[in-house]
Image (cartoon, rainbow, N blue to C red):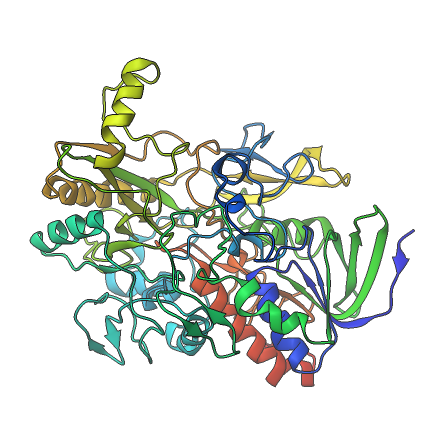
Amino acid sequence: MAMRLPAVDVVLVGVGWTGGILAKELSEAGYRVVGLEQGQMRRTVPGWQSPAMHDELRYDVQHEMMIDVSRQTLTFRNLVGQTALPMRQLGSFLPGTGLGGAGVHWNGQTWRFLPSDFRLRSHVTERYGAEMIPEDMTIQDWGVTYEELEPFYTHFEAVCGIAGTAGNLNGEIRPGGNPFEGPRSRPFPNPPMKMSYAGKLFSDAATDLGYHPFPVPSANVTQHYTNPYGAQLRPCMYCGFCERHGCEHFAKASAQITVLPFALANRNFELRTNAHVTRVLFDPQARRATGVIYVDGRGREIEQPAEMVILCAFAHHNVHLLLVSGIGRTYDPETGQGVVGKNYTYQTMSSVGVFFGEDVNINPFMGAGALGRAIDDFNGDNFDHAGLGFIGGGYIACYTTGASPILSHPVPPGTPRWGLEWKRAVARHYNHTTSLSVHGASTAHRGNYLDLDPTYVDAYGQPLLRMTFDFPRNDRLMSRYVTERAAEIAGRMGGETSDVGWLTGHYSIVPYQTTHNTGGAIMGTDPRTSVVNQHLQSWNLHNLWVMGSSVFPQNPGYNPTSTVGALTYRAADRMITDYLRNPRPLVPT
């Protein structure tokens, strides 16, 4: 029997970006908050100091900062009717564990979504007609507009010290920035990152073709910066160890630097690490959550009662908790009914490698997670889709993120896969190669969803989450079109050869792609088609809220972190100024 603790005002399940933000905001508002983090304590000092943090084998290959799949994993299949099998090692995506979550080892690429992304179904219908949306495409509007979210984007960027060049400032298109972005109320807090040589070659080629290159918005801070709370960030050293690594320089914005120190200093907040939440407790008659059950580091089952429960875990884990707790109606792809698990989406990636002569030195080892140049000409609805047979798009970027020697060994087409000739090719091309990344949208499809596996269980005896996903026809057509544009840019960069990594075959869970998993607990304006309302409050239990990318109805062609942060700040504002003063459903049903 679970040991029952005294009740608190708020319990947070997961303490990464969203949990860190809410821990700070709610504890400062005077509420007693408990944060339950399934992993261990993580701090910049002493945990992320060099040279240990630059151990590529430990962090890039052995995934020191990621979940342990022997205890918590999922099963996967491409199509309904196939038998899903457990993911035994990490590959396509890398969920983090420990305080700070995936925000510790992210690259720092910090994008705002386009205004049209938030009302995708309405926008497509208005511009192209309803027939542009196939029957099995389940895209929907978010229930919140870019204009409503813009102040919270601005605040999140200030908290993180984002570096960039504004392309649209209060409706005025500015040179050097992204001319397609939604209007910003303020410039970026910091100037953009330096331009790498590869970025210069890309920018020149894209400009020659009539496109609009700009510096990628970056959470790798470019100068000494103090955020609105007083946290001090330092300029990036371009060491090349961002993705899958913590930052020893206090230069990459993470919850540990920007928000958590202020929460941890507040006596209203208590952090409990090694606390794995197994289910949410609720009273179906009162339609209220009553707390959570978790297993602590000693293996004890603990009940934590709370007046408010907020799910702040990774996207998959939020959905899994809803399903194992029996909250909401599980999505059924056969009938299209139900909402929990619906609209699982990902990211549609492709690439183009560019191989130069030995007189062109890229120096790829000097980089940063968000050091890059991009074009947005083929993202969202920034180009005319009439007659193309698909919706959506993606940005094309040339990044110099730091080519670590174990993982980075680019060779041109036709090179043997191993042996002496392969080694010679790696030595020849390492310093003379770059690549273009196509970061494409993922549209929601009736057959892509999450549910509970009927066979496999985790270390706690609970059914594993089952993922059913494959790239829809729409996304394959989109990827082909945008990748062709990337190949044209690559051809202008002056390389000797190029290698186009087309999107082919079924989606595979084996090779790394992105950790941009979205959907399954989607937001909207109708409880028949969404799990949470536009404030991220559960339709079923008004004191249960869901944060993070699991609420995205579909995934645009951008990295999700900035939108996750903006939605969290917007939800926190509504909680503090309205809900907690008068707990109730904020949107009538």
